Length: 567
Image (cartoon, rainbow, N blue to C red; front, side, top):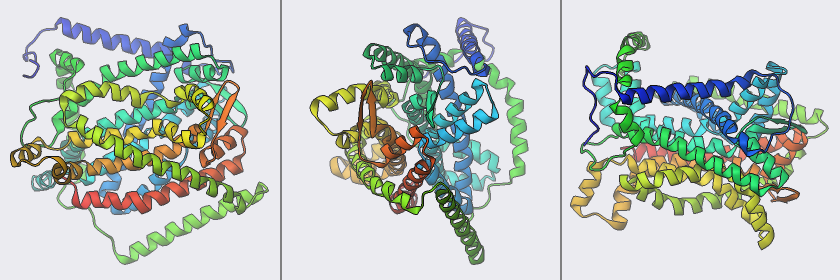
């Protein structure tokens, strides 16, 4: 049974009072914590007094949610453009491949320099740089997920939109966003976890031998790691667990339960996702009154959206041959211009193209770790994700645990990993795969769960009625059903593994530092020392590896998913 809603004429109740009080308290805490954002920046060491952790936690959460909002806006615009324009798709998808391959530390280097120049002497510049760094760890996964949900919209919904003459604005709100809701929610939850992974780097910034610090749980953990204090690390770990569980309970679980309404199926599921917070909000009268108050704005936006035209024709196909030739000639000219500029910069810094030889060889070692990671993660987590996603009861139990594991920053565990590696004599060349997996494997698990949840109940019931189980069920239903989501998880896990290599191939605790042979360690050293030619060479080579892997492996799988496995 659903949760009873108040009648249209319901009065203000205690439920509304609790909701209003919670909103006001949340706004007050956000405003108080945000007051320090515009203060003048004064270099100072981060205090490791545990009493400061509640304030640090709020500051970190504000950065994380600010980055998430930006990432969602970027994903919606980018995904819509690439799904509705073949020309935009040919430009923006390779561009996103490149952006995904650029390490967070490289973005952080540019962001710190730019925002400090834009806001000299103010902490706002560092805050903007930290938010941008976290944004770059969240946005690419969301953009790929929304793009793929748009190009795999069920045919009957697509035909319905066109036959009823929806405007493009109506199609976006009535068809496209609902079709992508489940994938967006689960990948947003995963992207949020990816942001936690780079929280230390975003709040405890070290660029060109200059250190900047912002109050937050990440900087607290970084200071504790530098001091080699396991007790303070324990407080940081406890705070992080509390934050992750609270955000999951108050924010992500209600969103997951709410997104169930957008599941495309003809038969209703016997078991649905539930959330105590969402059930409580549905009993409140305030959200319904707010919806009624905003109805004129919604109607005005709908009328204004008519200027975008009617959805009466399919997505544009290929352009003429002449236009294609001109497009690729211009693209090739821009690439050649960029390569010439890179060569001139390296020559001006006393280096040459030979500087690329070392990172190319080191990249092979990191590539081997990425391949091993993706294969092992697929074999382990796809069955687990399907098992969880097909059982709403199990999802309710497993989701908080999976969210904690996925969101928990792996570099918080690096002190323990360093001790284990030293005691066991395990080389970081092998142990680095485990550390990279802590940050990248969850993309595959979360997308497997989302893909399994999106399989229509009527198809599952049909398989039950036909007695199709075991290997045949996997071949006929599960693999085709989750394949599009798995490809999205695979490509983002691969890119995430390359990014994670920068913090996983060099681990430090106190005075002990372990280093693996690989491109991630090369980039980390160049960033720390401010060696810009080597940093640029390392980023360029990592970009080359990631784009090549996406072009040769993941992009053909995307086309296969679009052609054969869209529901």
